[in-house]
Amino acid sequence: MTCDTLNPMPGAAAFRRPADQVMQLPRLGVSHPTRLSFLRQMLRRLQSEAWVFDRPVWQIDARGVGRATYRAVGRERSYTLVAFAHDLPADQRSDRVIATAWDATFALYDGTPTQDDLDRLAANVPLQEAGRISPRELTLSRANRSVRLFDHVIDKLALGQQPDAALLEQTGYLMRTTAVYGSGKFGAADRCTVATRPELAAPFQAEMLTVWFIRAFSVDLVEHLAQMRGGGVAVRLNPELRRGLGVGNSTGLGMAPFLIRHPILLNNWIMAREEALARVRALPIACNDSQTAFAQALSEARGNAAHWQSGHPLQVTRLAGLRADLSAIADHLAQEPDVLSAPHPWDRLWRWGQEHLQTEGQEALLALLLEPQGALVDGLGDCMQADEDAGFAVQGAMSLADLHAILVKHYGWAQAFDFTDPAVSARFWYVSEEKHEPRLGQRQTEEGAAREEPLDIARQAQALAADLCGACVETVAEFALLYPQHRMMIRRAQISARHPYAEIQANLLAEDMLPIDLLRSKLAFFGASRFDPRSDRWVRISLFQGAPFPDEMVGAALNPSGQHHYG
Image (cartoon, rainbow, N blue to C red; front, side):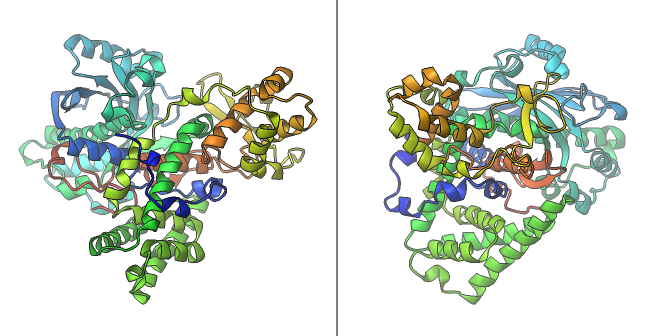
């Protein structure tokens, strides 16, 4: 399918938000999942193409140790999650990236594995980074039990009873992943080998399929252990309670630099979402069906916000504001019943929201506006991948005057920072030698700044602008020979000239910068819900809460947006 942004909806461009509003880190840090989120794209495709699902292998003993496979079979290809369940002592259970043992480990196999493949994977997958997988595998993952809830569910089902619904609601998952690796890591298939497959073309589709199958495995495992303990008395989990369970995830700083290192990809994600919002705002009328669907989405969003809990002070404040804003939207529609009957009703509602809602409420409203408009916006999912090699070469023939104009237009925000102020350059990003994961250091008190990663885009833009002013050459090629340290920033500037949403307009070195804002902005595109920071550097979320399970896909109602409460 041709990318819809190549043929945008007439008149929609006038409603598109500018980058200097959208790309502010505090706004990105309150992003909400939408129907364009990657997990929803995957589920829509699996259902529309009538994929078939089965569990060819289940070799799990009464202790919960063994292997299982979950397979998705399409018209042309199949994919199999190979799961290994382990008997993990409590003192070895850790969500930290330095952990060396887990309750379960997984690999997503390209096709249907043979017995030899299963034996090879059994020797490597439980070792994770210490093992090696092959290009026949697309992902490598691991997960730990949410022990208290996991054991509670087993205990109750074994006695023929259902678990406490409030306890399930409070936690929201039986297992949480601590890593889902793909795109060539540890020997897995490179992204380029699968990017042309329609079912994997959108970003992170193999990873989403992996997590979706892990969710099914987590429920199957507790039901199996309950049956092993309770025999004929044991029962299965109530379907409604099961639907409310997702997969937890613990995510730290390792995810944050991704958005900086992939500017074209980031642009395409944001551009698709902003084009979707612009299309909805440009609609001249709101049909009855879309009004009804919006009201339902708003009701579910209010329910989700009411059940969304966090102990982090910042998120507690944000949640209070979100609940108030969602109530304000409902009150506004009740008090002004003609709002959605007026010309350009969705734009009227959006402009009201910009005036009356906090930033988080505005981003929640964005997701709500997209919800009833699948026919109008879902095709934009085809625009969210990126050929980043196309932006790699520096355009040496560009004049310095044109490069300077790009900096003025797209990086004026970077000139506001005074990097001689210790608070402005307080931090530095580096990669740990032990785990090869991104970390943040304190410049004034910690060693390692000599190995700083180049994520200081604002500082680099300032330095480039300063050297441009004193250059006595005419082209970028000549300038780059004299100042090779600016090649990366020159490339980014040229990319930004063609991709307006490529750059997060923030100083990532500042003392008051919140890394969790970077994490949430990316996780929202995944489709994550129940965002719960545990510090300013790591967060827990849930994926696939409310989504159908593989055995429910035929005729299932697909509406697993993190906006909504199920259960």
